Image (cartoon, rainbow, N blue to C red; front, side, top):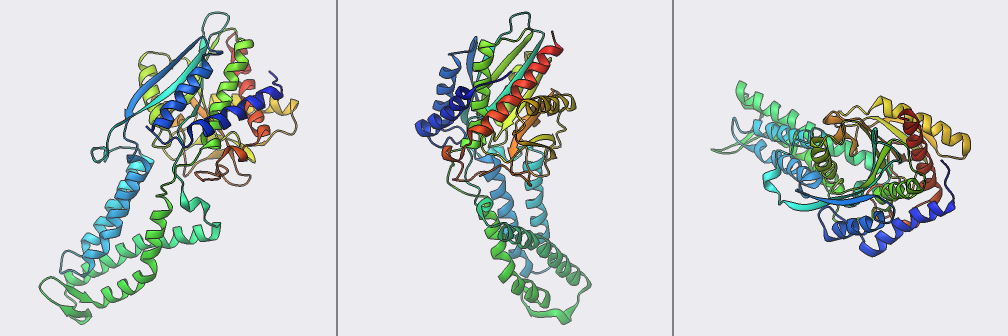
Length: 418
């Protein structure tokens, strides 16, 4: 399957039009909803069926909500240090509580803090291209419509970002150590370290050292928190309208080049940036209907500005990406490279920090994987969660590379089920 220049132009125009017409599209916003209506109208031009599914979610919970919760527990932990026994141990307890909220919500996606956040409505949009014969298999190809809030720390110089993270996180370790030290000293009753004592307060040498150190350390902790709590919603041209544009181009191409026995679903999920909620709603609905039982899902990410392609093998949510799909993606890349030697390089990666919609399929037992665009030597998207993530920084060549690999993948699957 080979595409011409018109497809590169088409993909770029999809991105540019949505950004200019609807602007930033945060989860559950009118801009996200209206962009999905526009995408459906575009899908109507070449799909046999199209639909928009609405679902409810709590956009303020992930990631800003749990970061604020974790930051609050960590931030107030020093208050208890100066108190009489046994209250200094609360400093360590509150730090551990903050760490548990961060881990359980970010890594495990438990959603335990949902009662504190308002419920709102988001949507997914998809189109279906039927094969010429009987449907023996399905492939779901998806991007996402919503865009993220700016991640301030991502724009800091690398060395500064490193030290903010190291010192900011050390504040938590520092507090645990001194909290335990004071608690133990109060148990054994060491009077020589006490500098001031009252009914409520017990000021000791341990407190003196702790709080003097905090003058330097604590601001870094606040700086670290603010680095993850940006307010500006970015345009999200690369992350992830580029993938939506590739999915649409695939649908446009396959309308004219029908597969024999494989049905294709192409579309764009909502609310990905707030915990893959659109994919979660999609999997719940179509998993129950049996649509996903005999299918592959390939999630596309950041396909318009990249220095390399990456096939994900595992992510931070403990999702192991389907080896069968990854093998076919690898084979599809080799076939595309044979025709286009100048194609982006390919890497296989495990994401210690980071994930995508694929985890929602995998955790429910369905076959899914992802291919996304990254910087040359880092598993990080170009202009990730940055105001630089705009149409003018999209490269048509990168869009074309992802489109060609994706179409080669579909061709391989179609041959498998002929």
